[in-house]
Image 1 (tube, rainbow, N blue to C red):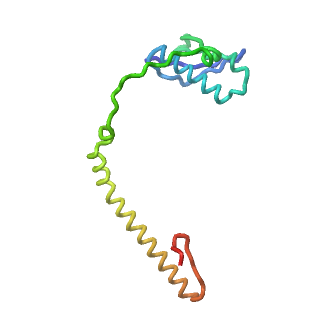
Image 2 (cartoon, rainbow, N blue to C red):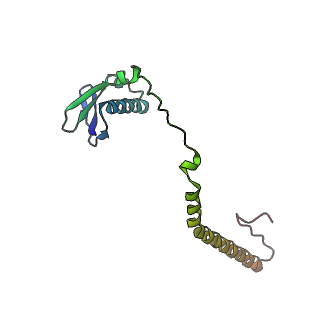
Image 3 (cartoon, rainbow, N blue to C red):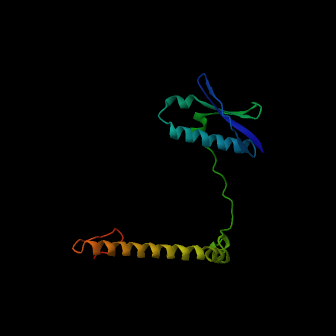
Length: 149
């Protein structure tokens, strides 16, 4: 793994990257550089000077790895990656039923507690509405969650 820095060179201006990215090799760095350029152009596409810019890719210590012009990254075609023939996995292989059953069992006490608290809250609201109705018998009180009465 190598750590690469994607520095932008635009006319006489040099914008260094300080954090860097870890990549496997130069090919992955080149693919990532193309992605960086495309996203910059997508975000700042109205700036015509971007076609004259370059992405200077360096390794730690400042040694140059390669330069990629924005024009090249946008307009030079790239061969599509070969599709790997990976077998499709069944949903049960991704989320086994046993795991879901354990998760449901772990969350069951929390679910019952939430249901009990919401029932207490609704009972308290009903008592409050009944109290208000006793104080003012002719008035109609309706809460947002109360059914149409």
